[in-house]
Image (cartoon, rainbow, N blue to C red; front, side, top):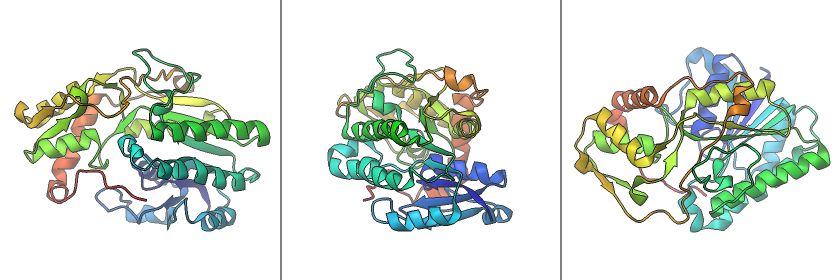
Length: 329
């Protein structure tokens, strides 16, 4: 089997779904993650497609030699990095862990990869949080970084390192920054799936800052299509925003989900206190990506209903799962 793609952070929501997308096209994919293979509820392949996917449980912080050995053995053309220590609010508690994973370990790995000529593109799946709040305006990819949390600062520093590396070693880096990704199979601590799960089981959902932050929500299928186009047509050293042209407040999003589930408003609790340094707006102009031929096809209403159907279908399993974030070191 020829494995042309290597996915770092293969157990992430975006990473695992892009693996499924590639495998459906009969592409050979190696997946690397610090945690064991995802439960079938969140990731599954049909029997005739399993041969296209090779999974390795390796930690970017501790297993660099093993990761390099794997890369040297299979020589993938495309490396897509979804690996990151996420959860913005948690990054205040142990910022060194976020800098270790998101910056230092990534630098160590890339320093070992920078002269590998078989790598044609390295896609860095970054985050709009590097910009800070966009102040109610659609921003382009050349916007200055103004990170407001340890998480955002660690990601911004890594992105800056990649740009410097390209100047020094012509490393084939391409950046993507996606809006809020959602869809069936997402981790249950995320706002869309968590709200659905709580409301279906008649549990209260608590919304920080009274839900007065604004986001664009993009379906995972549209993200996968965007990544495919960026791999084929994206230019080295360029950044591409993956976003819809619409924003919605978190409060209105939660009430939209409430209407779909048909539950009472008393289950929604708006809390005045907000997360420390929470950015109010993320508004990404995706015009550059659209020039490559990409379009988002799944509107928010349809995407939410798709997610609702997934939770209903699996509610007996989901009922037993924790909807709170559990930190992994």
